[in-house]
Amino acid sequence: MFTGIITDVGRVRSVRDTERDRRFEIETRFDLSSVEIGASIAHAGCCLTVVEKGADWFAVEVSGETLDRTTIGAWEPGHPVNLERSARVGDELGGHIVSGHVDGVGEVISVESEGGSHRVKVRVPRPLHRYIAPKGSITVEGVSLTVNEVEDDVFGVNLIPHTWEVTTLGGLKPGSAVNLEIDMLARYLARWRETA
Image 1 (cartoon, rainbow, N blue to C red):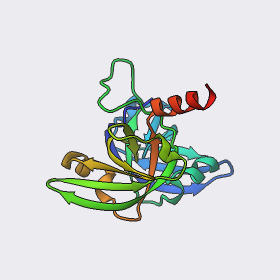
Image 2: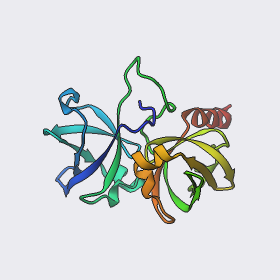
Image 3: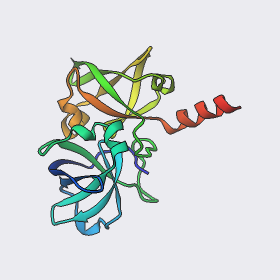
């Protein structure tokens, strides 16, 4: 489990296909002495397992399913990546409960400056839009955000200067693809309603 609070922006060091999956090596500022092989780390919102590590990098293997359903399939060396280590009991929950399971890929349709902040609008693939509500939570590229408004299949968020500067969201522009995870509560309420 995660909280959507990014603790490092890593960088893709290498990408290669193996006989099993696609392997990515990620450079990071994390203290890797405390990261075990098998640990879960969220990469732009996608939970992946550490399979090898060095002094300032670690490797993950990504399945075809994940490559097809997230933005990870387009990553190349040099690509910046929002990173978050998994939450531990007793950690502060500064964002919201995030599973690290990407629900879909959205498309940024506008980015506008608003004072020191930036207002970003994202088009959501249908039927995912049904699970997004004003003042609810959503995860965009692994970042916990509050939904400001929803109009059909487009939602808007406001990025404060801190978020803009310390995550990859500061590089968003119209046409950018973003990993999305809907609020877990919305997912379960929708399922309950469908089956009740």
